[in-house]
Image (cartoon, rainbow, N blue to C red; front, side, top):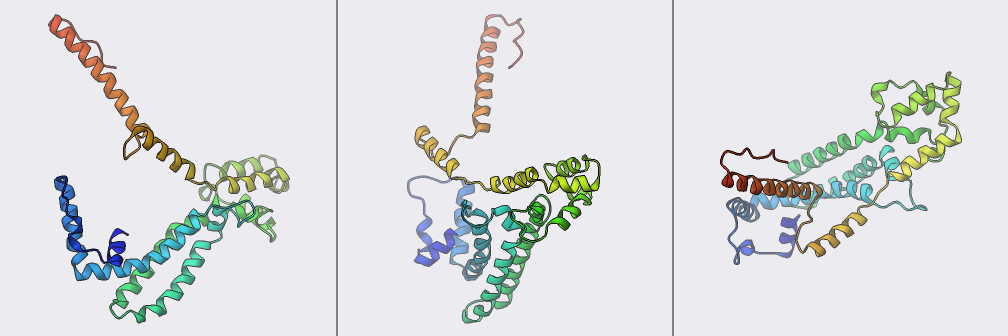
Length: 265
């Protein structure tokens, strides 16, 4: 993305020189490799193709990251289960391919192959949302306007290996626990279960805005570029406890070389 932005504004290749600090060996190698890529003809072609690939991936990401409002479209998990990503990216691909011939500097064969590969990756990655628990929307009365009796019956007869262990499998076992097929079907269609299924999809939508605000606040309070994670804070606490024990043990050894230091914490 940075390379694309720099190429668009026409930034020179020597913009990556470090003046105030001496970079580490690994960072120097990265800078040299990026400079070589940035000025090469092959790098220019790759950037052209990447810009076109991003049209597909950005379309998929925008659908997944869009915040759903109460009066807006259905929950994101349901949209993914209804193949919205695959449908819209396929439509975008159909629009893009005829336009590629207007770019004279573009390798059409490589670009079309890359677009098809990207689309195939999108299909494979989002195919999991057509399985359970993403498939539960098919027998929710609120989000499936069509007849959902057949979906409920198919769910009851679905093999355990096709259900997720967190929600769908316990739901199926709870339905069959009613004693008979008719009672299990009535259980799934009961108002309580239908409301719960609707809440599952509605509560699955989340936003990272609160986390981002917290990170920004922590950066300002800690006066550092990165936020100290829980893992790092715990590791620092362990190291501090070990240093305290080591200092005490070394003092004991200096006072009496025959004493045995205590067990580290």
